[in-house]
Image (cartoon, rainbow, N blue to C red):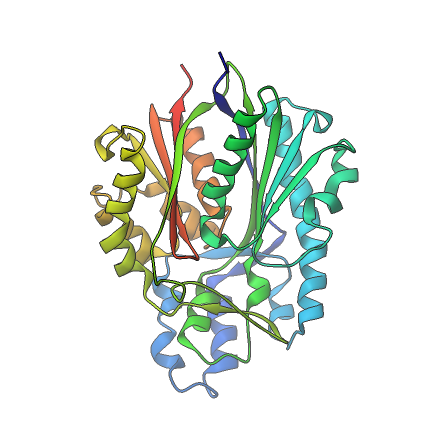
Length: 350
């Protein structure tokens, strides 16, 4: 009988530069206030986002100068490789697994383009084998942490005995734009930070938790809710619809449907581990999932300290939930471009 897929470790890493929200707000005011008539009205988001600070690939001064696509890409390749190695090494150490034992690497990132992909650039420094299988995944956005775990779990189940490393890494700040006078750009400037998270998974008898199930729900006609526009300057954020009301109205039924396929209901879940897209999103998630107000405490703490890092953010929350004592059954959930909801159910190891 095949052994269940186990989560062996979770680790997180952030770049060295810290952006205080008050400093970002002041810089944004200097850049946009006299050039964008709506800025004064929109600037309240810096105070209401639920963020005190974020980490960034570059110091604040770097972002207040015009940057070309090649400059952004160069910054992505340098900072992402270092962050990849940092997160992966911590995850391997926590799992008591050597880099040479890794059979497959799943890399999740949607904030830069790297060919060869990041795991190839980090392979020698990490000590990965020459026959390691590489699965780079682009375009999942904020849902990438949960979807990436699901992909890794499927690969582990398909190759019993194999060991999978997943790294979700985003450098969202590299998409900050000085030339886009839009609500979406101001909101992104107030929300996004940089970070990485890594996990090790394997079909095994023991681990932190076993993967019970996973699933996704893709809503039709929602391509404009979240994504990137690409132009000579780089990525430009797309937020064509307000996410909090969409999440409140639609996430609950989608999660119930995903859980129902595996014979579970919302009442079977002891703790939802959610991607905290912003303060209003967290509150909307609590209402959508019929949770008590304030239940998503670790989500709010991660948002306050790190901002919205896209894909790895939910894994930062998971790391905190594990440290506090993982409940019997947890469901990770995140929404991202598509527009999609992704879920993964974890059962605490006996």
